[in-house]
Length: 299
Image (cartoon, rainbow, N blue to C red):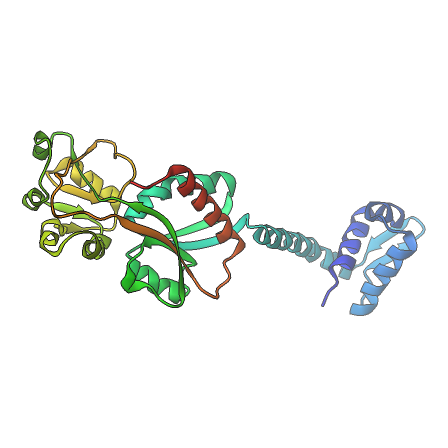
């Protein structure tokens, strides 16, 4: 195995052509540099320099080595930088999952902050339901995910940290017929197309009575919130979301209080027990928790 320190000494000596100048640059004594070069030559059974009173000159083998040595040293330094950055949590690839609704609560701020504060971290974001994300987490395809805390998908191998509770919101375009009513009975929604991500069907079991579920089952299921918003802006469809802010160009319907109580959706952070998160993942999670704490996405 080639010694990178001795190889560095070789490159500096080759570039300066002088033991005196090379020793000064390397902060070594001339005898120490001479011993390093001799050890490199002896170990590999080659002569790298021809010595003379006017200086040192590369042999044919020395020229051949120099062509590769500088690239090797550069790559070694790059690798060391990458490892140091990874250890500090400022670089690396983070693959995580998030529910379609949860993504619209925190994902824009999270992505923007990571891009600004950690430009060397690469993110791979997977959208999906709690069921899908739980399996991916167990299969180590993702490091963590943010999604609805559905009891049926809780595993003894998964740790869940509570993040926020969100109330269902029903959003429509600005001139939607339902906006003419001061308050809307829940059953009125069944007369219009319902637009929601697939995870909404999972949530229905926990947030509303069985009688009211058919009124709220989505007509169109799509795990792309942006497309659902666009559809709601251009049709009579009702977009169902658990969202902390009003969506531009969409109005929130005022649902009339009734016996059909809409319960909040609990959103949690899921990680796998007995698995060490990468430093980059810990950096991303630190940002995520800060966003949740400052944004207060409850309702």
